Image 1 (cartoon, one colour):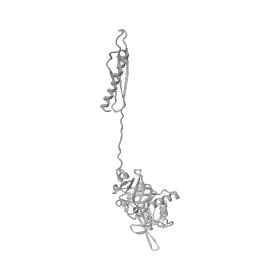
Image 2 (cartoon, rainbow, N blue to C red):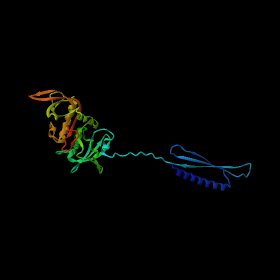
Image 3 (cartoon, one colour):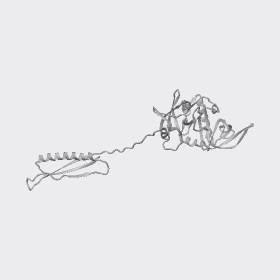
Length: 335
């Protein structure tokens, strides 16, 4: 409580007490009273404070042998309220919202809903790093190729999950560079095409696993091989394609679980493209089924005069379905 208010309350209390005493003296026929004593209790913090005033009134001597004393106590309570408030400034741009205080250079955003307009795609995405749901707008040509767009991916994944009891998810992997140029209008963040870098992929892995897998492509600790559904000549092997060397290869996986996972991804890609039983959906150039792995050459397989390099998988970082972009800047150009 500030000083002026305290002084006012004390004056008000004193005025009340003075009037009360005067009335009491008139009632009792008194003409004098003793000095007022005050006891004040006050802590070192703003809190409720109670001021107790004790007034002693002495009646004049009528009978010298029996003087009479009347005591009245008046309590004045002052209440002050202290409000502790912490003001948190909301994030000012999309970079702060998505990445927070991390040093991450890209973020996998789970796509939960898509609406397609004449020129733009409107994505609802969920950032599991900051647990934030966002609305993103970007040109539809950036999230489509031929007759396949991001909405087809999401609906194809949802239908496949419903029919097969699987848990595949669609991701927009968004780069950090230039993302602070995004502008918010009508609750939607408009991405600064063509300055953004991104990929679209499908995985049954969580965003943390995806984030751990993809940097291996940057630092050359992994390569991308594109498997087919053709069984290779060895246990747990599939025929595939080396996109870098443009060569047919044999991929020797670590176990049958990895092989089954790859075959399931191929089935999902076929389902999205509407090409069931296609052994190699990658050949259409729209969806790639990519295995990211650290590999090493373990030999050459000869079959009727044809030679196939054999790549053994050392570290398996997962298999993904990737939508090959019609336009835009790829975040990982080797997918």
